[in-house]
Length: 132
Image 1 (tube, rainbow, N blue to C red):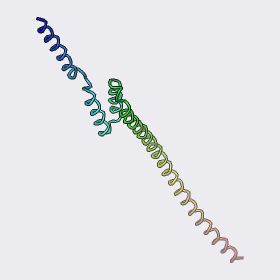
Image 2 (image 1 turned 180 degrees about the vertical axis):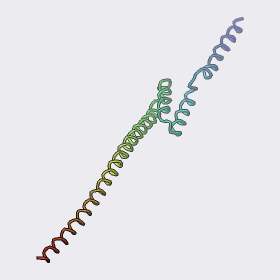
Image 3 (image 1 turned 90 degrees about the vertical axis):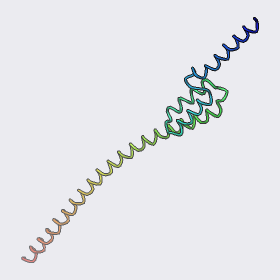
Image 4 (image 1 turned 60 degrees about the horizontal axis):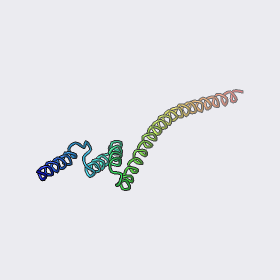
């Protein structure tokens, strides 16, 4: 009878262990890490950081290698955010440059017009001097 109870207890324990992988929403450590790596490879860095954080929360003993990856991904995210900000700034500067180039073209046209007017005035002045 004692053997029967041991067998029942053992089957319940093993059954519980087997069902853990099905009830764990993140999967086992290898699955969690593979998911984080896949997200990183796909360029979904924010989700990758969250997956690495979940892995770290449940598997702190593997934190050194994973933290390095997480830090690298966080660095990539920061760099991408900075690139986005700089691209926006570059677009603004280009827009300002185009406006200034337009203004410069107008000033050049005005200068050409003034030169032409000055040349006409010189011609008129020369004609008046010849009449005297």
